[in-house]
Length: 425
Ligand code: IMP
Image 1 (tube, rainbow, N blue to C red):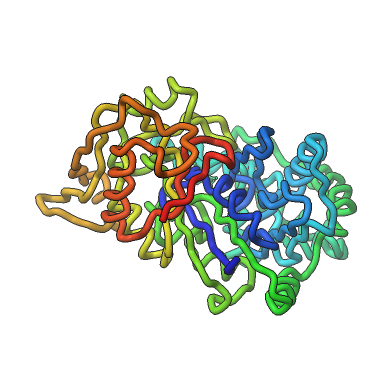
Image 2 (image 1 turned 30 degrees about the vertical axis):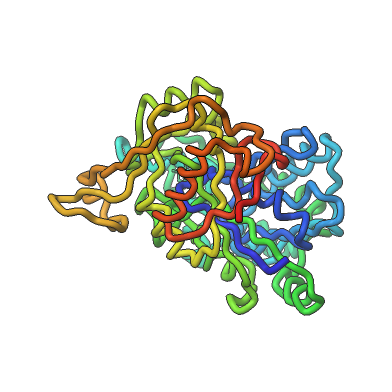
């Protein structure tokens, strides 16, 4: 298979984990290149459910290799919990099937405390973060004071660095309700973690270059989605990494020249967790999804906000990521709806616009311009064995979305299982 980047075309939770799992069969190595354990990828594999946060979903395949690249931020304690949970489910994790970059930054408990503290200070303007310390870890990275995997393994100046970071965090927290952080506790905890993680840590960029030369194929598993990108998303309601296709290269050290294909993943409707603009959000639609037991976050269990498909967002995401194809997931979530709406443009201050605005003030003034299509009420798509047997109206919906997004839909999801992933010509 060509070297492929998988990105989310909306606000994350598009079902990328499932698409990655589907494509892994034909790939050799699955790579994570950004984000941290804010991500939650649910994969149903051989009738068992796995929730992955930091470990690429390729781990579920015995023959495949997985890489956690330099752009990922790693909470070592949470990573080891993920090891243990997967091992309890019968998945072996060894340095043969997982390698971790020595340049990846560490998320430690003080980052989580600072994350909550910052959020509590934002009052009504909360980002609605996952509370996993992701923002503060990337702040340290950009401030050039972060602690990396290489420091954890070397241990030489690890304690010194942690004491200095904790002192700084405690001075920020002074006078607040947050508990004071104890550096000795962190040092003890992570020294034990370091022993377990040591065999996995390596120079993953060189490893990946060698694998490319040996003719192996790579699959980059994007985390979050285009509109959570720190540059291109609905700033400031975004995460702290580049979730768009370029982030796969900077976050792994693999050159853009080595990338052959970009697949953007979108849901057949739209969801988002956390705060921020969401033009097509619809309460009735959200209630319907939650009533069906759908759309609860894999990481925090929060109810996702839900709404109609926004073609303004997905078209722009396809351009921005250079998407060769779209994978459209959760089409079965629309089964039984009479009339389906698609947002084709926005109205902003009396003008029709076709690309997302930059400012949150403008986002607040945008209203959706919809077109409507007849839904499929007599026949469901759930469990359809192939595209041909899907209801005609569902096929018409796929054609229209493809046209509006100026990108062919090649993969269609009609249920959570890998078998419910259909290929479309
Ligand atoms: P953070 O990444 O925890 O700092 O959160 C920033 C924003 O990104 C919040 O709105 C989160 O809900 C959102 N976010 C982070 N990770 C994910 C994800 O994997 N799926 C969906 N939303 C996410």
